[in-house]
Length: 428
Image (cartoon, rainbow, N blue to C red; front, top):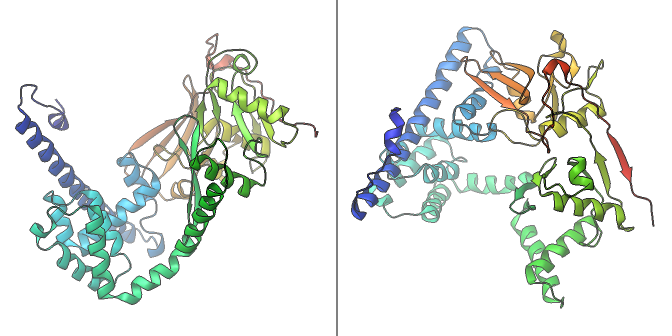
């Protein structure tokens, strides 16, 4: 039995009180484990920086890629890895009372994160005072939920250094952004982070449109349709004039095969929905939608190369369609760079096998000393192996394409034909 399996076992004959006690005990274990992870991450940062200092690495370059290693070890994204490392260093070096509350199970990892986050704008001295005032008395934390913890930390931070809190609020608008992520049932979440006045005004405008529209749509549907119409400039019922990489088998596209299709940047969608999208984009005379068709044989996209240093547009589209998201394990961020796994300056070819889609952060992280990436074409598809400075290995395989190959052939006999073109529907 692995040492952690003991935490997964539950006595089938236990009574209700024992089961509740078990749940509470495991919650304390989770919090203590989070404290242990924080201490380990802070120690790793210190050890790595000392070693690199002894090796003559400039101070500005020490610790590069460390957040990515922590993310891989925690099966998390590199962005989350950076947050884990910052959280760990703050707790271990500046907030001992919050760390003690976490290791004793009085605080969950998320509530400790809220305290660290709200104190981030303070000086080290003020952060330590907030830590002591809020968490020195563990009994005072009992029964406090997320909102109370966050509000208490905000109040103390503002009292200790109101100018720092105001300065952070003034900087916040520079972080405004819009993000998109998949939702269930072939829907998507488009989220806007806006200054409060702008955010409230956007919502009020959509609400006003719903209050003055009377048809068979619900209030939420009218607000969503109004948002689409005002952003894209076209009615919500019209296929949007954007390029969509839709990968599906010919049997699914032109027949009734139920094999799901894949939309780059989103994921799998039912074949029937994909056919509806194609029909809407190509038959509505009001739409200027563009479809990109990609044909392949075999289980995966495997062939295409160039002699250029930079990946040409066709090969870039090929790799983006094959990889779909950043190839670093657990990352899943949108692809920003098409990267040579074996560096071009070291003789790496500009090819589909040596190419991989990465986010900007992961591409730069692997350039730190001690990191290496190798790629290969295996039975399961295009495979990437990442080795970190500690020698730990992680593997990533490109997601499978829609459809199942009829015949399995040896890798050496695989032949791939690819035709990437754009089809624009004629104007009405």
